[in-house]
Length: 259
Ligand code: ADP
Image (cartoon, rainbow, N blue to C red; front, side, top):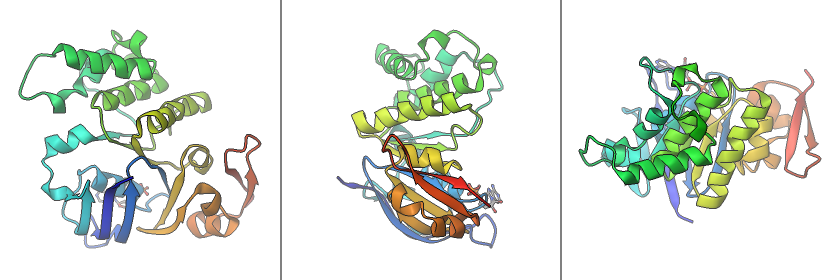
């Protein structure tokens, strides 16, 4: 498997105070990575750097062997999709229209949808179980439905990489798992690289194969969730005392904070 992101001594701050401090790491194509850590650790900022949404950093960030700053934004948008925590639309677009917008980076100046775009959008909606929502106004959907539509729009882009910024933070437990079940299938069946920021370490441990824990702009642990989720790491990362257990279904570990 090839290296899809290569970060070397990445330093970035919105002001003179660095938010990302000397980050060096590699992410391989096809990985499922969870980025965890307390509020303000720099997780969302790192995701934005990877998405090409933040410039002005020092050090280097390469995507597919080429410096991110040398990618043109349309080419990047075809390869990297970004799903935020929540999406609001100012205009009353339907869910189907939002999914079709995911095809925009693939249109070479054409204004009208072509049948291939509709095919991709249809497939993305089938995968995310959103076809029945196509004619509904996006803003009228429930939080879980909206996130599935936004995921469908991201998939219609046909990306190599899916960046997720706490995509299930406002969803109930069933819809959290439903969302990550879809993402897990995309990773397993299509080899899509997944990098997801989440506060929920138990959800992260259930789905991700690699957990990267950040604190104050640096990684303080990086490895399979079973290795990262130790009482000592949990204290170092979140300043909590926690007990770590094995899941009864054999899918890694889960934690219970005790203090
Ligand atoms: P996390 O995702 O881990 O909660 P963020 O990357 O959102 O952390 O934020 C890291 C730090 O950067 C925080 O101190 C936050 O206040 C600051 N920050 C985030 N976005 C901006 C911004 N647009 N302008 C200035 N500071 C910001």
